[in-house]
Image 1 (tube, helix red, strand yellow):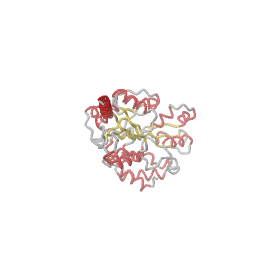
Image 2 (image 1 turned 45 degrees about the vertical axis):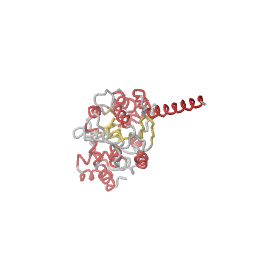
Image 3 (image 1 turned 120 degrees about the vertical axis):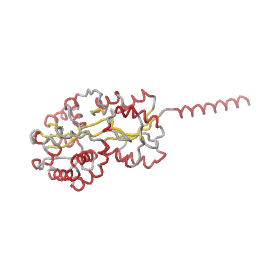
Image 4 (image 1 turned 180 degrees about the vertical axis):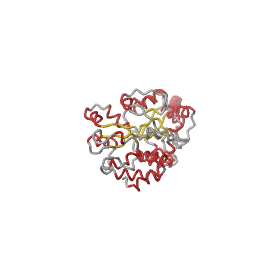
Length: 340
């Protein structure tokens, strides 16, 4: 009888110990719209440094945002990561983010690359891609030049509803004003070689093939082609020229990849540590060397041959919060201009 009581007591102690150990396990629940296999190293390095296990769910931005909204206060998500200021702005408008107070993040991430509720950790530039045989590069040195009558029937683009284009229009609204930005959009639509379709890589291929004379693309896609193992993809780059727009004015527009901590995050300490980790030298180098993005932290050296090949440029210093603020107006302009 005594032995059975002792056995039951030991079982109870063991159960309590197991529950305590489970409760003390450090975890981070990450909802990510970044779909890059190379990010695996980024996450495993964080776990190795901190001992915090990452539970990750990957899906498209809208799916993740809908999931977070449906889960409500019971959501297990600690961090939402995605690409582009317009997408982060959407999450912010839904009231999903919690302000993060971190001296490290304020010191590491430039003021124009963060808002009170979310942070950019890497950037990509939105450049003009030109077919060498069809268009003279000196005639298209600025985004505004895409509206020139000289480019009638020569411009290709992806959808006007895509966040990359929303962010670019948001920047143009800030620099030119809404009226001139809409005038520009209508003129660019009049120059289309075809109806908008496909992604940035499709625009690059269309320019290289001569279907279009000019298009706009993120540098991420160009760098990926430059580093491709496929000769036919690298050869595309021989037929095009890359122009860094607006170098004599406000600078080339940049897109971002970033994220923030959610208001309902159950593991807030782990969440802040993860955001701070993304601003570390290790993580910043990874964004550049592993995924063809520029670090948000200016002091981090880049050793990516593709980015080096494209050279240095003057980036637009417009605050990402401004891009977010203009996103709705940007979409309305595209709709009125017929930029489908």
